[in-house]
Image (tube, rainbow, N blue to C red; front, side, top):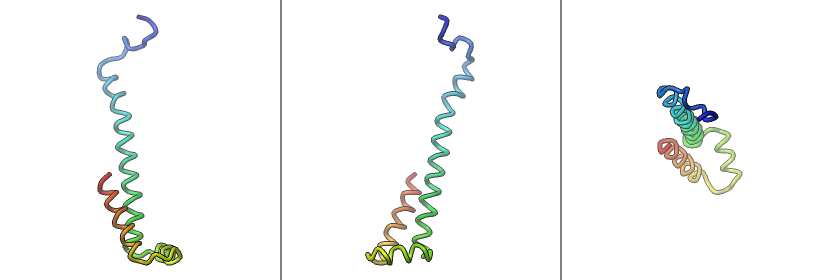
Length: 78
């Protein structure tokens, strides 16, 4: 049974090793939700850069509100 390296691990060590990826994924999900929320609020609140960008695109400012609302919904859904 040599070579596996699992005989010396206690059950608590194995439990911790299983939790680390889960905690990392939760942290990544929280960061992603924060980024989506900040981008969405910048669009909905009318940040000057966002207003200029959507004016350059030429679709209209209504589309800025739609994209901002979708980004905020994506942040809530994360």
